[in-house]
Image 1 (tube, helix red, strand yellow):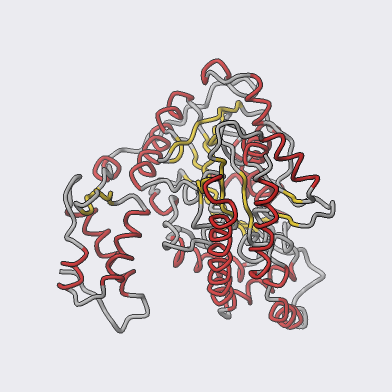
Image 2: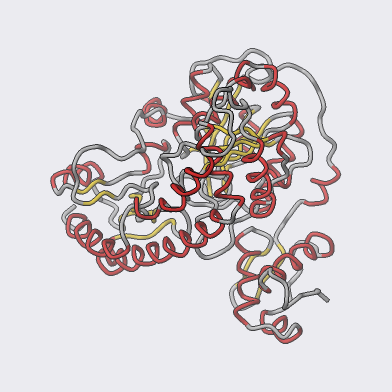
Amino acid sequence: MYILDAKSKIPLHIQLYQAIKEDIIQNYKVGDKLPSIRKVATIYNLSKNTVESAYSQLYAEGYVESRVKSGYYVSELFFDSFRTESLNKSNKQPEKLGTDGFSLALFGTKVSDSKKFCNNSSDSPTPKSYKYDFFPAQLHKEDFPLKTWKRLYNRVITQEVDFGAYPKGQGELVLREAIAKYLKNSRGVMCNVENIIITHGFIDSIELIAKLAKARYGHFAQEIPGYHIAHKVFKSYEYKISPIKVDEQGICIEELKKSQAQIVYITPTHQYPTGVAMPIANRLKLIAHIRSIGGLIIEDDYDSELAYYNRPIPSLQGLDKAENVAYLGTFAKALSPSIRVGYMVLPSWLMKLYNQSYDSHFARVSLSTQLTLATFIKEGHWDRHIRRIRILNKKKHQAMKEAIENCLGDTCKIVAQGAGLAILIVPTSSSFDWEKLKHVAETHRIRIYLSKDVSGGEFQAVRMGFGGFRLEEIEEAVKAFGLMWKTI
């Protein structure tokens, strides 16, 4: 029997999900059937919706699989092998590797494909004037809590702060404390103030890792399609680069093993750009592999706060017991890209290298911004903002989805939705002309964003960003897009 507390601040569906998850890990075997939703609801005097929400979260994280007209069954987890597998503690240095980009022969990749992956297109809004801009990674300017931010900013700069001294290179303690508490509670990240570094965004974070890890590694892999900036940063530090394909389970681990790469960059909670969530079984397989070679996983948790149908899947880093995961996060997607604040949770060996480097001597974010953000988090404004922005963007997401279905009908298919700030669509016509779409969109002053332009590989889709619109603007924007789309 599970112990559920109706008086707890933790919602009942979360309590039930956590209890069943632990039961699966400790007592179930692969293929075991879970009790029906109706049975659980009856036993624990819960509503059907409560039980469905718990099962839905277990399904989203890959603990169970659904069989039509049969029920839910435990998925393959590999927990036993993961727990008993010994850590390879070999200190063998990696042999010197080439720096000629991708291993094209190994992956059967065409030269033209590698050029696509190295595309210099920028995933940022253009200054050109457009009637409608579907930028897939921004919030509307009215969504920022400006009044609260100004009030807190004015307060912190009037306190007894030493503006004549250099701020702490690792980041202000008060901000690191606030972030550590938030990550433990919301993302299941194993961290403390000593292994958190405040950075000025994703590029700063990943460049610092590339610089520090060069002392131990020389071969980098990442998902393909994937975020092009990660590849470019490691290439600039002369790492050998291996693109690893993505399927419905996330990054292909067998292909990663064959590549012999020592560092891998992934977006497991909401794969960029396909939207795939890596299930628990693959997370454990990946960690086991990286542990066996003494390698490093870079987990980019870029938009975990913006999940609309299920709770965000807990971090992969929280599963790692051997310090083989570097966790990256940012305030860009849920708060503002303009304040330029990111953070990293690094393994102790990387922190040691950091503390020995010149990077540790100088702060990467202004003192006033750090203190304002720390107060914003500590006083509960961040939690309130997240709840508000999630509700607002869930409405925008639904409005975008309905507008796409109504205006585009059967001419397109939605291939990724439910999280982030964009819905991805593909045409249903096999003869669709992508180049013509770009040209026609420009003539109609509609700014569109295609996955392949910044992600490489063969995955192509239109990224229909909704975050930058007001809620009432979305339908009109999609109607204009639909009229243009149907001319292709």
